[in-house]
Image (cartoon, rainbow, N blue to C red):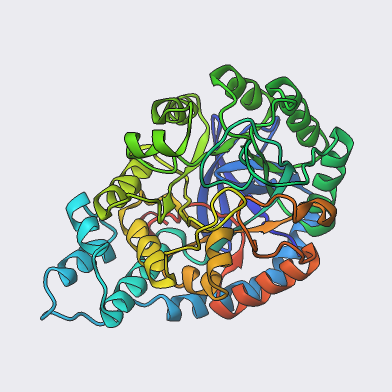
Length: 436
């Protein structure tokens, strides 16, 4: 099955296209030549990425039509706001504000991050899920992530790929291997959004990476996100010119002193300069932080969420610190703490932002994916790295899905999304009903 649903273009305004999906409209930027109203297209990340043969599109939409309505009804039922509890102020005031589609303040976010009681956490999760549905309906973006090298010149103290890590087997995929793996993910399994990731490999220059991106774009209609660490501002420009449109780069922590302690020879300002340059030059930014860092406070966690919002992140990516070849301590973060952070982030995030269930969270807890999607998340990643390399991308120990085939992963996510009423697609932010 395809990880996008085709839509029909109803309107063109310059570079902006209006696309209809079963009567609901979305807006997307178009970089394809000669696009006309009536054309069928795939869109990802707010971009039109490919024209679709009309007969194929109509057949697919006929197949999806009834199922899509069933999924919508299922998701609507599962995302109803919880009954109010007027005796529980100020929590109820915050949940009412967020449930109406209004973003919450830092102080309100900070309050949510201190909740401990299971029943109050459950109300937070359910409200976050309702807000997710309000902004994104039942769409859930399923990205494929392809890890092309585990070499890294940086020495982050928590990372299993760090330069001084005890990791024994390093790999670097060749250009042909990368192109073949991308082809299998896109053509073999239907991924329309692909994340290319590596450590900060000195052998993979921005020019080489840009050429690989350009060749994938030449061969396939796909939305490409890159995650190669700090490649320099000129390197970002090269990758954008090659056709990459999203940058996955966590700032890890908004605390500059803590960042310096964990990243020898690097600064938070350098990391943020990449993200701000990307935002200024048209990239979609996907960013966030680590949960459970030594010395981290609830105040710094709130600042992390707010910083992701200030960076106008397309996707909030927060994951737990886990044991690795470089850091042997076991995770101190629990599933409820992670769910609390994801739910609070959903309420504080801009409407267009998705919240990701990270692989690190899935490694922490086998129920993370389902619980995260029910606590406001609307994005997941499946690992499409060839199995002969995947276990060696040991950014932390015991990584989830390290030995699962792509076929098994896709089968599992389709079953889960069906159960939750989600459509495996990236339709973008829903048009408010009054504008439909």
